[in-house]
Image (tube, rainbow, N blue to C red):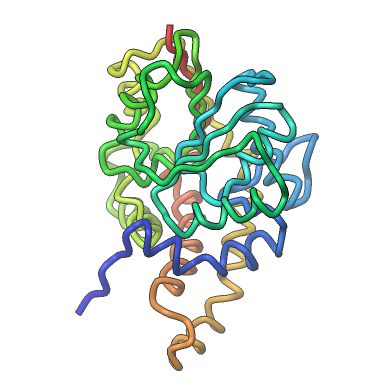
Length: 282
């Protein structure tokens, strides 16, 4: 029988060790995203934090502004924004275990300008016009209906508020059969139903009411990070299969490693790109 693909909760619960140890190499605040390489960062750990800098600069986040991190992972961007930009940040996440980890890190480090809420970013539990910025880094891909997120982001933003995103974007719909197979082999084990094209993202943003929508292809800046994951996963897979035979590593973790190889294969095949989106609520 074919193994069912994990849901978001199962995926992140089962791969917790992989993100903490294999990807973040025991960093204190764990980043569940790729790194951005430029003149500010040429090493893995620096590139992870540099992604936060790039997005914060793009959205022009100012001290005291209220930021909603939609799909906050383990809170890396939340803690960075509060510490480096003086923002008041709310991290929103559907994964209970990750919210617990975020709260524990906050309390252990005595942080006050960051809060966390377990909720779905397609049904945000805040009123209209609450936030100055909605931030989403590699999270909206998990939504089956991405237009629902755009509507909610628009609703909770103040007039003049900004939506800033980093997201995987397919290069066409449909793609050649082999490219579609590579995308499925990557996305589904990562609990991602599909990814949209840049034009589809632009259409969702326009339909929700956003204006001044800018999408930039930054794949060259992220390629080193994507290749790093491919290489880490390629090295780990034989050991993972060995441990899997004895039941030490489960199918979700093995699927995660295989998919981490396929994401770079799909990139090399031209099936997707890495995009940054900025949009404004007037």
